[in-house]
Length: 84
Image (tube, rainbow, N blue to C red; front, side):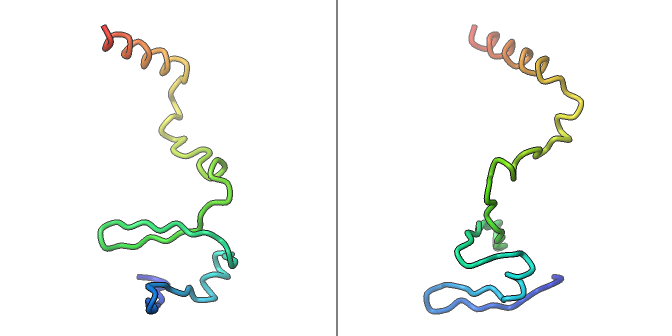
């Protein structure tokens, strides 16, 4: 693992992040972090200040060649057929 650091859990199951990591990521006291687990892997990331801006454009490559109006019309037609 590149850029690995070793940290310890204290008696209250808390960790302290190394100062150089906080500076590198522009983290400040009071900033919120998101913690996720995938199996035995812990994923820690800074919580976005504005979730809408953070998610804007997410997966835009998936929708690149799709006409949104045509897509909605097709979806609505399928819903209508499944309800009959």
